[in-house]
Amino acid sequence: ICSTLRPPALRRLTTDSPPAVTMAETADAQAVRLYVKGVVLGFKRGMRTQYCHTALIKIQGVEDSEDVDFYLGKKIAYIFKAHTEKKGSKYRVVWGKVCRAHGTNGVVKCKFRTNLPPKAIGGPVRVMLSRRGYRRRKAGGRGGRARGRNSLGLVASLTAYHTTRCISVAAQPPRAEARLVMPF
Image 1 (cartoon, rainbow, N blue to C red):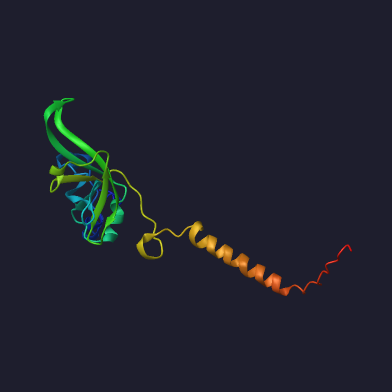
Image 2: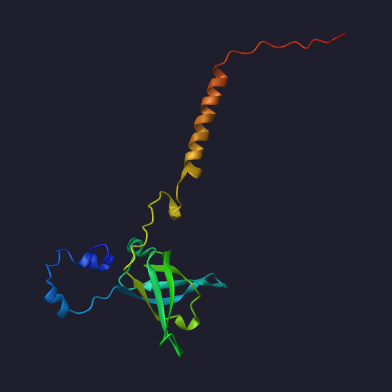
């Protein structure tokens, strides 16, 4: 597998490059699995409220929040078997994507096109490695809040304007007092 498609857990284990493989050898070799296994832990929740639109997934081999960055934006599939056959198959797929980390233990929050059923809790999912996904920008500060022009840049520009304005006002000579002339 290409190093960009190799999950972080496997990347740590393999240090040397794989040997060159000919076409004859690949025909006899086993099929390569292009997904990583995961398990549905449950749903995002508060103390009393459960939010079914966001599922919590534990991905195999992901142990900390740095490894989660590799999977951000990747497609995820929950595959289940239905009773009735549609389009020639009894298997159905609910697609979703990995949105963000949940804590520092390697659990991720995922959003699916339709909410997962309650029987999916404890069930398997597949995190596809075919799509590259996106990498989260490293931002300063706590909580990963992006520091863009609207937060720090605007404050810096206002501070610079304020200091130059105060200096320029203080540097001006005092004005001559205008007398109020009454018409009578």
